[in-house]
Length: 376
View 1 (cartoon, rainbow, N blue to C red):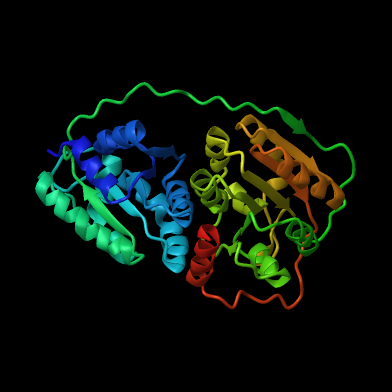
View 2: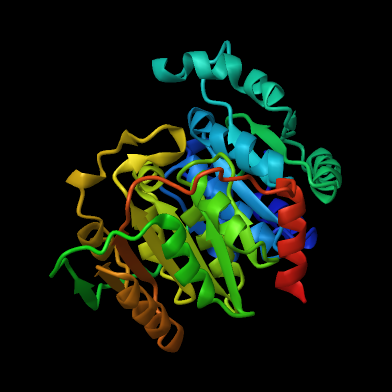
């Protein structure tokens, strides 16, 4: 078995200090080490962990994700439609529950047989992590060489690979909502592009804008293509998790997340993680038109959801229903003056700009440009 602390120190020497993941009994000792001695963000699901790690990478970190192989299925979307097109590498450790020939729970049987096949299908380089420390050190060197070339690399971890690492006492965070404002009057219902113009007009050279998948990113691009913008493609529902990783790792920048109702509904557990870690430099704006606008206008379930109450209950410091563009401007300016994790909810009109184009830049080019902006 590997001495977990010694292995963790090898990771640190290579620059891997930022971890995110979801627990697994096979990985519990490595997770305990990460919690004890590194920056660790506990995600509500594995896809969220991948997106959080991707955000930390944008800020200059070399991130690590930890997950059970059953959760690898949850991580497929960001791995193939966020990390791959943006060329954002993460170092992954995935357990091998259900290893053929070793008794395990029935829910792990199929996943145990197909874990490595899934990694192959996603074109992710991987190796079984050796239980011999010297061999494992050599494997880390090989893995690091892929990360340095902007390629994700995964270790598949078998049972009893890591020695016991006791978990130190953890200080529980308690982030309470201090301001919740519900609906008090009629909605103005501006178009999305009108709303994005107002949001964009308030940004400065310290602001990073992350626009969610689909027409939100495309319309922001059409309003102004700027080096401090990122236009999500695929990985629906991951934009606030990307923003969380970036906000935690780059505290000197203002991170503005622009999300749609369909996307947030897809990964609503992210609100709990955001509220728990509560970076003050993060503003989360939800534009709700009750539709999947980018795919033909099919209805979402958002008309039945009180997002303001949910964000407040999840620990957002401020959760505010915004009725019109003037209120939106006032709330953004208030956030810039007095930073705290803030959720702004605004209903907008259905539909989008006619003849809407797409970004001319490749996703990885947008990423590289943003990294330059972040580190200037």
